[in-house]
Image: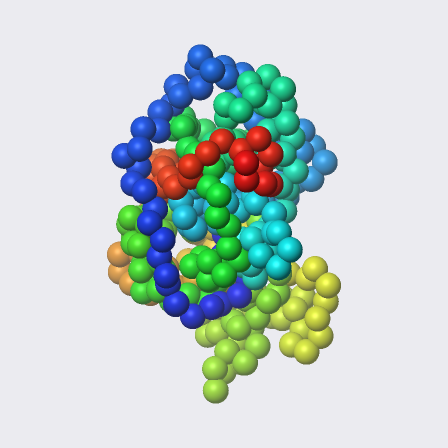
Length: 316
């Protein structure tokens, strides 16, 4: 979910239409009733070959929704020197686009021109969570696909170095609350981060300290051994929590122990309100799951597209 590089807050916000545009859980009941089983099957099949797929799909959906709403703009390919979102710095490490392509191809042969890529991605993110042992939920459908995708707009994504006020502002600009911020951060229960996203905490933290003092010392030492200061190790990094293929509340428990990966995770302990939510979710997986589902539905209802693409990588 976190962006790979920190970029200053130069927000040029584009209108993201409100959830008022009729999304409905039975939107495709008559036009494409097989939709959900086809998407689930594509996600399951991909997971058999690559256990990082769920984290990739969840992050992809989050990164899609935070720019121009959930309009599948993150799926569009760059064209010549017009770089698309997927080639913006925070999105370079996104992967598993083929899962959406496979689902779309199957749907085009059954219900041509009916299902948006944005809806496929929202469903795939839900399946990613459910198939990793997390909750399932009814996804409201009826999103349209966007026609604009600009790499420069990826600077609007929350960065892993953000402090709590930057995070709150970033989420508030999308109509998301402090509870949404803390609940959606729990998506970090799935996934892996490369060293570059947390290097700032384990080397040259500030003028006087090498390591972020809020980190558990043995945990920081382990990260430093994996990510040495002046030596880039290809693909080196760390899982985001101790059970990074299982959707659970371990992320919050580790956060309270000083074992979080990103500065933006640690930032959740810096205000009484966010810290209370972290503690609440750490003490009850059920309470976390309920909050996560509500926040996912809220986030995924930010709509912004105009068409139904026939190929998720190109506009019509």
